[in-house]
Image 1 (cartoon, one colour):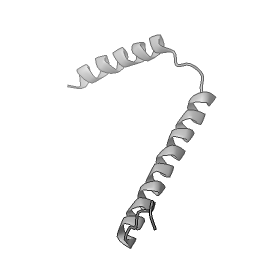
Image 2: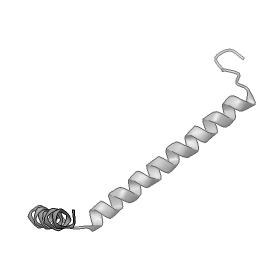
Image 3: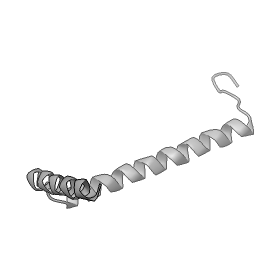
Length: 62
């Protein structure tokens, strides 16, 4: 039939697999966005202080 592409079963299955994987990625991105919307803004200065303290502790261990 003009205008339609005939494909074999292996190609159809590969395309279905790709669609499933893309759907999974989209679901994961949506879950990440929902989690980000639930949390408050991080306190970057507190994070940097904790990071520096961890660095000092690790330096003592070495």
